[in-house]
Length: 457
Image (tube, rainbow, N blue to C red; front, side, top):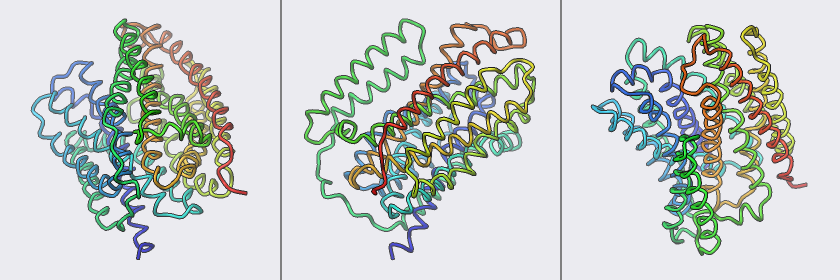
């Protein structure tokens, strides 16, 4: 009976894996219309995207721990429902404050999905099939990223930005409905363990101060917030080492090299790659003078190849050591970033397409095997925390990547707008950013190689 329900688990988690990146990439296309609707300034508009990311990052780990204690199916269902309801409430917003608040609630719902979806899949399928299943699930993420700008753009242009939220609400409700039919899970024996509330508060404060402080650099306030966040993080680690039932089992990092190095590699990889689309979108439109639709046709190459190659990479990681596949993928990513260092105003579009193709294949080879390594390196009772941790690495890496880009822009371009007149400054900034990202990615290759073996002899 349970085996017959395995496709339902895969379908429910795949729908949710598609929905959240689809929502994020669609909202980016609709930002001008949303800003006009609520009369938002530039700072408010930036919070439309950042509020979701920040809320999800802060709550992922605590919610993953709660899911381990009380049941992942319950949290997946609740998260999907919260995501759907907050999407519907977003279209009823009368003020920007309420709209951004709903984006925060969406982020919390998304965190409940992120922290349980992968764990549910790994729990349901035997180890020999995990790579293939995780590859399918990760492919759904890239398909969401690929479809978001096109479907979101069409919906926004012809039916209004609110239809994006209605569409996402329907998908969220579908995932919640399917999860009802998922086979009942066995609650771990340690389900009566206490939840570490003080640790959760310290963790939230540390992450919020670090991330918000990074967005405020190079101002003194940004530096102060980062210092406060660092102090809170140190206190959090010390507190976790003394707690009988910690929020984060630090021993997973201290004693499990595969888990520690795989998470570090994920953090570095997302830090080195997330800002690429952001920078190239500006480059293609402000320097190469492409239209938004033409820019979308160029940028779709990377997520399309990620979606195509992720399932195959996942299947390979069931037979070949994830350390090898992920390291090859990370090396290809370095190669793609190195190519982008040489972009100029007269660089041919085909050159950009080739670099994006290399990056797409590289990230596909890295991602699925790396997730397989993380989830295969821990016991069943830690699946929720492991799932939440790898999702946290993704979100934190994305914010660090954007932080690097904005720091360089603030230093080189300052408060000037990106126009044809400032094109040379922008190209210098883009090259510097790609140099930093490429060097960061080289460090990620070593982190990936250092993880050790996952498969038994």
